[in-house]
Image (cartoon, rainbow, N blue to C red; front, side, top):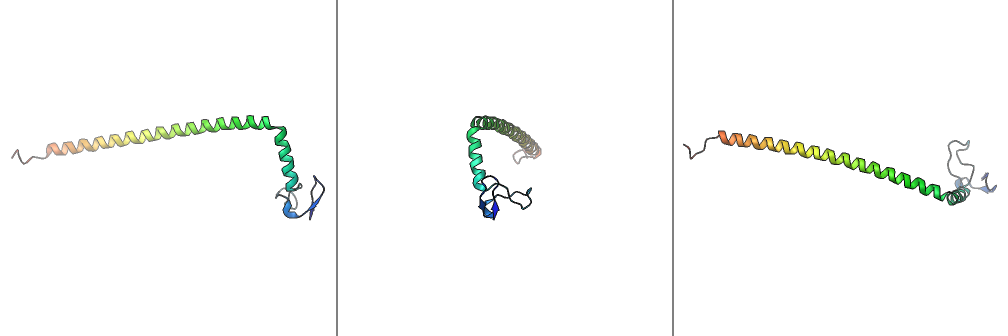
Length: 106
């Protein structure tokens, strides 16, 4: 059993979240008090949370856009290289075909 510093009630050790910084490895507030405090804080700071989330979504969108652009550039580079190799191969085939004597010419 352990006493919650917030509500003062004795609770089972399983009702406390882990906290490696505490001597016994468990937090000083029970899970229920943590939850109530988090709900209260979020209710009081909802506009700040919304602003933060909006900023982060914009940052993530910009990062994704940059990643997509980099992937598109890399794909185009690979495709151009493939086209170049195909052209070289075709030119070599044409050159071999020109050098090969035809049966009609003999």
